[in-house]
Length: 422
Image (cartoon, rainbow, N blue to C red; front, top):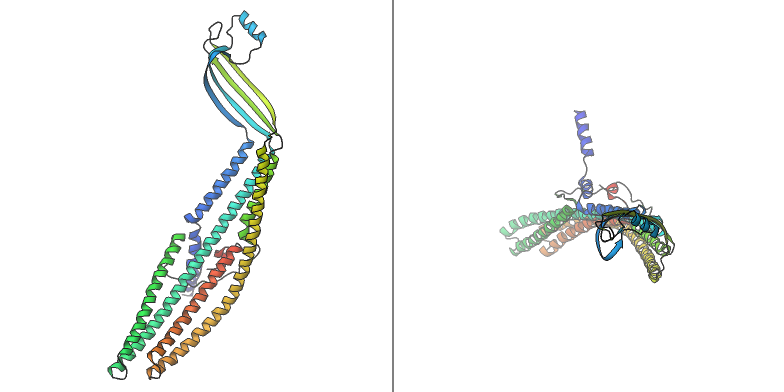
């Protein structure tokens, strides 16, 4: 029997909590897959730049007509004389068909190395942005789940208030029937119960909206809420939310370097070959066929005013990106500091709220006794009910606020909430 109990306990311990299931489901949903596709697109864009280092080959074919005889390929005079003496067709015609191939390959283009470096930084930024978006969505999920808990606690508080009012109403009915209380007292208590029921309906509507929000992120419909537990502290090693911008800053530096390196001469290797056909040459009206090609090593030095403008443009973009990084860093540091302070204050708020609930429960117990013996009016008694309900609502909000604040702080420092809470 003990073995069976131990086995059941182990299975229950291994079962994932609803929050852990939500985090796991989030990573498989379209909201996360969109960022994964962006990473794949950036990888292909990086590969596109790298492809420029390989030979570029193109095939061509053409049918050409000239208004006078044109050579299929250049023919020196000595060759032309030899062909005429031997009655061989000359490579000249008005109608020429050509098929062939062009090939080119960069041997040294400094700008390409800079652009490849830029794409590496952009790919890094996209990967970091994907990871950051996962943390942000986890933060939204945790906040929504905590709000769900807030709604459930508020509903429990309203149910407790309604139950307490119902008991008072039933006791008051006996007094009214015996003539010890005016019938209007029943209306006052009933009106208070109606107000509580309306609030419960509002809570149910808000809870349904939160459940729909969670389902939209994870595809899971949450019915029952389980209290959130923190199992690990937040690691504050670096401001992770700043890393994608810093990677883009490095990419912009590479862009500026590429603009400057356009003034460095490019060394290109180019080749071309074509097979040229004509049905009637200009002399003997015979078919003629000649192959022709060339290989060239070229050095190209671009000299354009637009290159200087490009440098100034990239420099301006770099300064803008530096300012954006500095601005975002200051904002995130201030936000992190504020969140840490709010978490510290919220812990005190939770402790105070718990103590207040206990005191209001005790006060309500005395108020119900005093109301029962006629020492309190209906209005005075109802104020005690409202005070306890308000205290319970404050406690529920403080407990939910803790997880919302924790989620925001975890995003800034790049912490996976699946590691921190369950």
